[in-house]
Image (tube, rainbow, N blue to C red; front, top):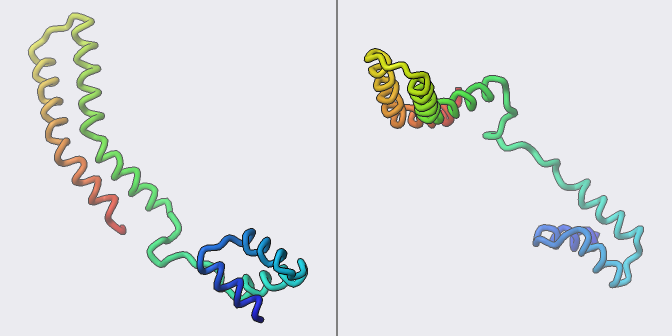
Amino acid sequence: MQLVLYIKQNLDSGYSEQSLRQALLTQGWQQAQVDQAFQAVYASQPAPTQPANMQPSTPQDKNRVRNGVLWILSPFIIFTVNIVLSLFVRIIGIDFALINIAMILLGLLGFIMLFVGPTVGIIKLASKK
């Protein structure tokens, strides 16, 4: 019982099992006694439980995270699409006013999403539903 108490106290203090085993064997304890004491220590400790706020992930949780991340990345996705489309249109040589207006509107949408996207994304990531 004294050996079990000694092991519990030292494990709680941060010593590793291996260092305790080595120290006990050098102090003259038998290997079988040390093994039995460690078994008693681990048998008396409750099994680690999962914290209440850490619940297993469900498909809804995964969708929530994916949606939150997409909202946060949305302005960068819009800007990238705008740049690629602008380059593509310029390389082909299309120069219609309507396409220019569409590119400007897409750029404005990206600018607005710089503020809205991360805000909505953080709200989605923080929500429990």
